[in-house]
Length: 190
Figure 1 (tube, rainbow, N blue to C red):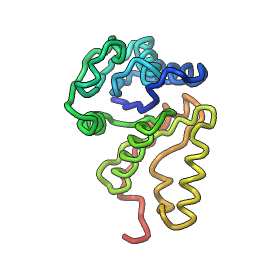
Figure 2 (cartoon, rainbow, N blue to C red; figure 1 turned 90 degrees about the horizontal axis):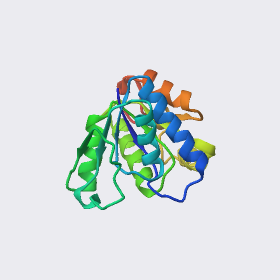
Figure 3 (cartoon, rainbow, N blue to C red; figure 1 turned 60 degrees about the vertical axis):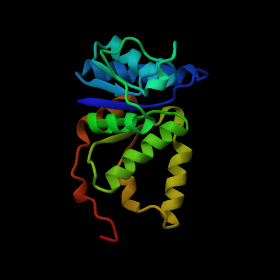
């Protein structure tokens, strides 16, 4: 499978996030999967790529042409795609991945997660989405989603469209075994 991993590109991250994301990439590569990712060498993007490299996996980096700055791009990709815009970058990753894993990150990572979640809710795709909750990073987001569900802003079934994972093995299991038909999930207004 081609796995898209979303995550932070920052350099000031606690080492435990780096280690767990590298372990995830290595484990996925060892299981025969390939990586499609945002192409960065730093943060959790870089950690995922280094893990795939260590595990012998194939890597496709995707970054807009304005990222061709020295020191930003992971230079051990097997292939690199240079779309014109950030939107084209996301579209390429969405179209060319079989599953998604969201690791901790900032605004861009949240945006990528919510975009694939929205596409899944709208039945535009049915690919597995794993949220890798390293060190409880996504606990606040899960509370926000639960509160908004309780208040009627998010449909309860939306929480069935992704899986919160606490370990590398849970995230791997999610992308390998959580494929299902989105049409089986019924929303109250359908």
